[in-house]
Length: 81
Image (cartoon, rainbow, N blue to C red):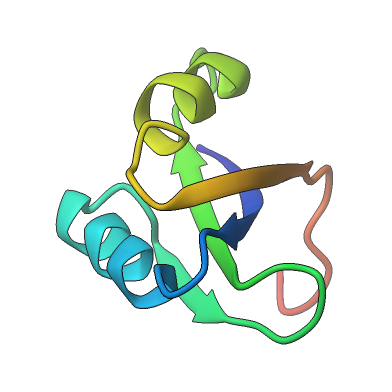
């Protein structure tokens, strides 16, 4: 599995609706409310052969209330392993 993160800018007043829709879709492993330039941060896992760009385009960006996204692809996890 490949992890990646997506930051979300939501339309005004839509942050909770977007977060709830993400949670109900069960496509994100973690969803956080954030301060700063983006309203939400979500962590996703996809199979190694899944195209992340297509996944974000077809399953994430289609959620109503999203204004903009910023995808962060990770390479290595540090810590307990």
